[in-house]
Image (cartoon, rainbow over all chains, first blue to last red; front, side, top):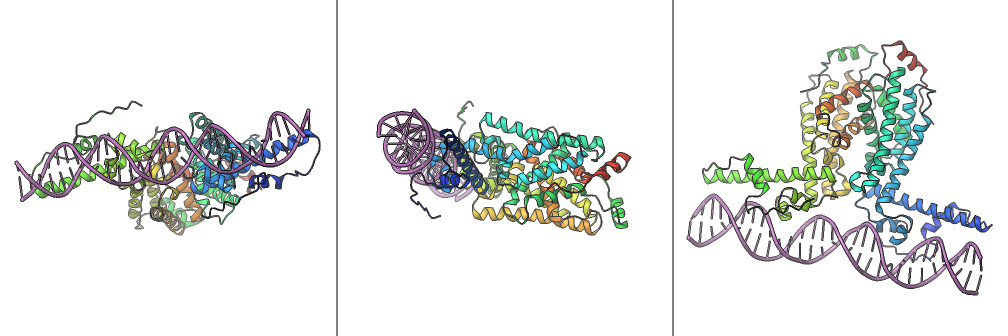
Length: 248
Length: 248
DNA sequence: TAGGATAGCTACTAATGAGTATGATCCATA
DNA sequence: TATGGATCATACTCATTAGTAGCTATCCTA
C-alpha cells in the first residue's frame, strides 16, 4: 500500500471536498444561514466518516481496522476522526444504526392491516434483505455485544429485539388471517432473520445480484420451502415415501 | 474476577488432571506402551486446550480473548498453551475443523441414494444444526478470512465450499427425483445454511432447547415455508388476495 | 480588524497482547 | 543413579493501536 502522504492544503482536505460537493457552499446570505450551513457541513463530514468506517469494517473486520486506517482512507489524520466521533465503539454503533434504520422504517409502514400479513411480511423482509446487502449490512449483522460497552450493547440488543418481535408479530397475524401456514413464530422468525442476515457474509464476494434481487430470490425460497412439487405424480410418490422422522 | 493464582504443584496442573482423569495412567507396562500413553496424554491435553479456546472465543469473541485468558482458564501459563499449539490462529483453525467435521461426516453418510434426496438433506441439515449449536459452532460460523493467514483462510474457504456444494447437490437431486420443489439451488442453499448458521448467535443466550430440538424445529420451518394453510377456506381466500409482487 | 469558534495536524502516552528466551522440574530409561 | 527428553514457569521483547496534548491555521462575526 503506497503511503501517498499527499500534502493537502489545510482547509481543503478530502473531507472538506466531500462536503463541498454536496453543499452549495458558495451561497452567501445572513449569518444565520451561514451558521446553518456550517452545521450541515459538519453533519455531512460526520457521515462521511461513518461511511468510511463501515467500508473498512466491511472489508477488514472491526478489530482489524485501526482508526489510522479510517483516517488514511479519508486522507485525514486520526485526531480529525476523533473530532467527529468520540471513539471507535461509537463508530461501530453509528454504522449499526445506519444499517438498521431502514428496516425499522419498513416495519412502521407495515403496521396497518390493509394487505394480508403475509404480503406485509414479504415487503418487510424485502427491505430487510436490501439493508443487509447494503454497505452497513456487515456492521449490523456482526456488531457483537462483546465488542461494545454495556450501555451500547443494551441499546443494540433492544433494537435487534424490536426487529425480531416485529417479525414474530407479522407471523402471528398471518397465521391468524390465514395467509401464513401455522408455525412456531419464534423459530420461524429466527430462521428468516438468520437466512437474511447471512447475506452479509457472502454478498461482498459475490455481488452479481443487487440487494433487491437477492431479497426477492429469498422470498421465493421461503415460500416454496422444501415441499415436493404437488403437480406431478413423481412428486406425490416421493412425498409418500418419506418417513417423517429426524434421525436420532 | 479474583486472581486465584493458586500455586499448583508442578507436574500436577489442571491440564494434567484433565488428562489423568481420562487416562488409566497408573498402568505400567513395556516402555513402548508407556510411550504410546504419553502420546495419547499429549493428544488429550491438546484437545483440552482447543476446547478451552472454543469456550473462550464463544463467550468473548476471538479478538477479545487473549492467550493469557485461555491459559488462565486451564490454570496454566501461556507458554504451556504454546507448547500444544503453535499460535492463536491455529487455535481458531482447530476449533473450526472440530466444528465442521461432524457435518462432513453427515454428508459422507448421505451419499448413497437409498432414500429420497429430501430425506437425506433433512438428515444432513439436522446434523448441521446440531454442529452449529455445539461448543464449536461459534468458531465455525464466525471464523473470518480476515482474521487468518491466506493459507488458513483458503483452507477454511474450501471446507465451507464443500459443505455448500453438498447442500446444492442434494437440492438438485431432490428436484430431480421430485422430492423437492423446483428451486434455485444456490439461493436455497444460502438460505438454509444462513438460517442454521445463525443459530450460533442466539443459542448461547437461550439454551432452552437442545441442538437436536432446534434442528428439528428448523426442518419443520423449512418444510412449511410461508405458504398459507391449504386446508381452510380462509387460507385459500387470503392466498388469492395476494398480489405477487415485491415492493418497488 | 480583533477575537473566538471551527477544523485540522504532529507527536506523543499508555496499555495490551502475541510470541519467546531461558531455565527449572519430573520421569522413564539405561 | 545419571541423563535426556518432556513439560511447564518466570520474565521478558516488540509491535500495534486507542486515545490525547498541544499547537496552527482559517474564517465568520462583531
